[in-house]
Length: 160
Image 1 (tube, helix red, strand yellow):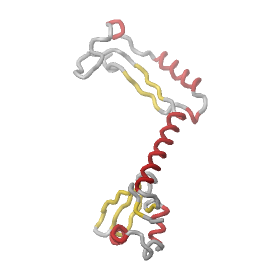
Image 2 (cartoon, one colour):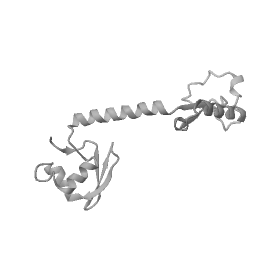
Image 3 (cartoon, one colour):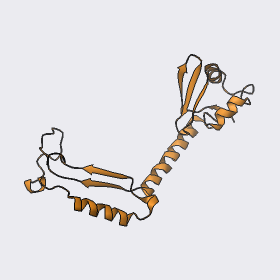
Image 4 (cartoon, helix red, strand yellow):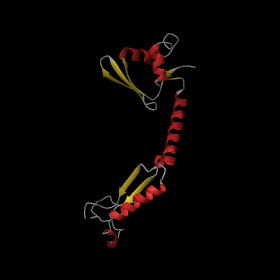
């Protein structure tokens, strides 16, 4: 199988004689000699250089692959999908509406005229916040599955 530089390698010249390599899905970061990187880019991975120590090292770090570009793109899509499914399964997100109190002066606001004056002055109390956290603790008893994200939403909480 033919070896090639991974499509997810970012190379950055950091000094006159050094390149930093970053790999997008492996997370590898390494410094190599500029001459070595340029030789690998120019010559590819033929019989003369694919057995050397640098090539072996770069392959173990993910910079060199035997996958075609299309196979590698498909692999990254599968990896991203699996990570997304894991996040959906493992983590819960809560959004708390702190208040409707607002001066309604934001030109982009979608709730400009939808909130009644009665709702406008309501603000989440400390007692309600405590109850929300108790409910989160009850519904997410497993510490691994505990919510990692709480979003505060609504109004201008600093107006009152």
